[in-house]
Every structure is written in structure tokens, then in C-alpha cells.
Image (tube, helix red, strand yellow):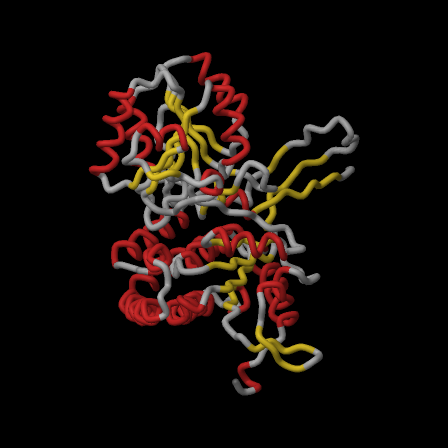
Amino acid sequence: MDAAQRFDLNTTVHQAQIASQKLAQLPHQDRSQLLRSLAQTLQDRQDDLLEANTMDLEVSRELGVPAIVLNWLKLAPERLQTLSLMLERLAVAADPLATVILPQSAFIVAPGYAQSTPRGVIALIYEAFPDLGLLLAGMCWKTGNALLLKGGVETQHSNQVGIELLHTVLAQGDLPPTCVQFIACDDLQSASGHRNLTIADLVARELPIDFVIPYGRPSLVQQVVQQSTLPTLKPVMGNCYLFWSDSGSMEVARTMIINSHQGAPDAVNAIEKVLLTPNIKQSRLTLLWSSLKEKGFELRGDATLAAEFPELILATKEEWQQPYLQKIIAFRVVDDLADALNWINRHSSHHADCLVTDSYQDSQQFVQGVHSAQVFINTSPQFARQSSGPGGSLALGMSPVNSFAPGVISLATLITTKQIIQTA
């Protein structure tokens, strides 16, 4: 790598900080026009992006990249068309920075208010998902934030076309390319010379990055969270729990499980663990299992169920708190609802847990007792990046309840508030 290709990380981040100030001052109509231009440019360059993605897929298959990552990596015309539609809908959405909140605190003695404001510089560290950077760029433009992208080697060609596309749109809007920067160089300039760039270089230093979003397999997310000294989200996928109460409908449970796995390309809220009491009739249980097998699910069970039903694979101790990220469901017997809540609160991913019941009392006990960002009662937790309806909101993913921004990672996650106190 020659000197022209080397870069200084401090300079890159400070350029993003300056660019974020320009974006924050941009009128809403101009920010929305960026989104419309991005949607159109994405359509115009769809073939280029698909061709680059094909190259990434070929290289990844040769390297033995896992099937789940290949699925996340693979683009299709339909997936890009969906992204373009999401950007168009985002363009006509209300200005997220226009919110003004009157003061509620009794400690504020002078007139004042709170104003929504961009966070500043967002960093996305991700693997696969070549369309994710484009989506987050649109969300950042809508909210007036600058964006740093650090993708994996498996998306090298797709990311190159993607950043070219983004810079084309920024140039059309007379904005600097530093509004979105892709950290693709593996050669980091430092006082001791040049060395490979690591995740720690980006997240474990005193850089003006306002918060970090890692996205991918749990190993990547955990690595970033452990190394980061910056505010960092912890997006999670899978390992969602369902408690099937004695009064709950088998058909409702079946529908919730199957639908939760239909998120594309990543089933963020997939139900992978089901808890039930010994009172559930065997006939209802075997009927559910038969239906799930027909849909291609692999079934596992705890020691009690695996001993009674040899067709179940015995689930290991570690599996109960880890996502499968596949069409696998593990079943476990618990004493009652209280026991189920205790187990869920110890082992789930804490972002989307579910209950099937006909009991109002059980539903209230579950809602009050479960430690989860979202709770679903008799309805599927199926995740979609674009919610239904013409004014539907966008979601990048989900964070657990113990995150500093729990629940849906949306436009609201990318903004904060400043309090303005003034006198006449």
C-alpha cells in the first residue's frame, strides 16, 4: 500500500465531526432531498451494486464463510428495491429535529425548553449486510449526523460501490464526502509507523465519536462492546423466549414462532426458545412439533423432554442463553409462570420476549415481571426494518432493555435533546 492510500484515523474522525455540524444546520427540505437522490441513485446503479455483490459472494464462498453470513451478504433486486422504497418514505417523514419539548422539571426556574438535536458522529461496525450502511446513511442524513462505516472484508466490493454512490449524492447536494466515510484501509498511520487497523483503534481511543453501533454475529458485537470506551449500543438477534401458558392457544403459539423467523434477511426477533409447564397436553405439544418440522425447523429439548421424546436433540446448558440464528427451537419444562420469568430474565437476549395465554392475570404478571425491551402477548414479534403503513418508521435493529437506548434502533436513537434556558 503506497503513502497516498494511508490515512490518519484522528483526521478522519475530526473531519466527520466538522461535517456533522454542516448536516445539523442543513434545512429539513435539503436533508430530505438527499434521501430522494439516494433512492434514485440506488435504482440507477443497482446493476453495479449487484455485480460487486456477486464478486463478494464468490470470494466469501471460497473462504468458507458461514451460510448465515452468506445469507446476510447476498443482495437481490427485490432487497435493493425495498431499500429504495424505505428511503423514499423516509424522505417524506416529519423532521425528527423539529421536536420542541416544554420543561417538566421543577428545578428550572427560568423560561426554557428542550430541542431535539443530532448526536453528531455515528460509527457503524458491521459484517455482511452491504445495504445496512446505505440505510443508516439515510437515517443519519435525516437526523443531521455524520457517519463512519467499518465493514468486513466479505463486503469489500459491495462497500466500494456503496460509498461511491453515497459520495455522488453528497456532491449533488454540495456537501463534503466526509459526511459519510468508509474506513476500508488496513494500513493505519501512527507514531510508530504503519500497522493494521483494529476495531480497538476505532472504539478504544478518545475520539469525537458520539456512539458506536456494532452489527453482525454475537462474536463481533461482543468484541466491540468489550473493547469500546465510547457509548456503544449492543444490537441483538434471536434467542427470544416464548412462554406457552396452560391456557394459551397452540395455534397462536405456532403462528408466533413461524412468523418470528420470517424477517429478511435477519430474523432479529426470532423465537428460538419455548417454555411450557407439565400441564400442557402431550397431544397439543406433538401437534405443534409436527407443524414446526413441516416448516423445516429442527427441534431440541431439555433433559426432561429429550428423555421422554427421543426425536428431540438434547440442548446443552450454553444454548439457553445463546442465539441459534437458524431455524432451531429448543423447548424446556418449567414449573409455572414465575419459574418461566426467572429463567427468561437469566437467559434471554432481553429485547423481545413473548407470552401465549388467555389469562389477563398471567399477561399482567408477565408484563410486570419480564426484563425485556419489548413484550409480545399473543402476537408475533416478527421484525421488519420498515413498519407497515405509508408513514411507517424505520428500524436498524434491536437493543436489549439494559442498553442505554433500549428497544428499536430508529431515528429517535440517532438524536438527543439539549435544554435551552433563557431570560427576557
